[in-house]
Image (cartoon, rainbow, N blue to C red):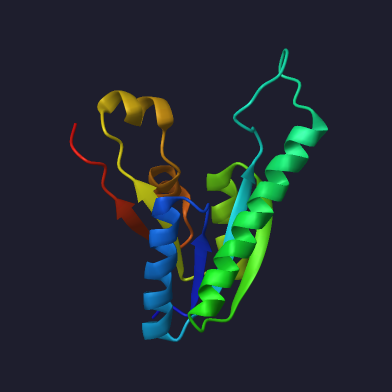
Length: 148
């Protein structure tokens, strides 16, 4: 059923959980894996009036390159062969675009549940937004937050 699995990986705890679940699904389905890391177009730090120094963008790209390389190493250490791709832009749009271009059958990504309504409202959710635009099935590896 799933022959091409796109793993959107950010190196977070939920991302590492998604990596493990992706490996299990890929093993069962004998599927190909593409690991995708997306450097967000708007880094979390703004300087001055919207000016983002080039070295800040370069540092973010390098950080996500390291995340991608780490994910590939983890999958390879479990015996998987996978492709890796680094992309730059809005994560939801880039994940959907790459999934469509690669003809992915399944997108796997991590999701951490928000602890409160305020956190859900403020933080937003890549995984929830992706479900609305994904060109294929989506599997979310969920990390529950402890009750407060």
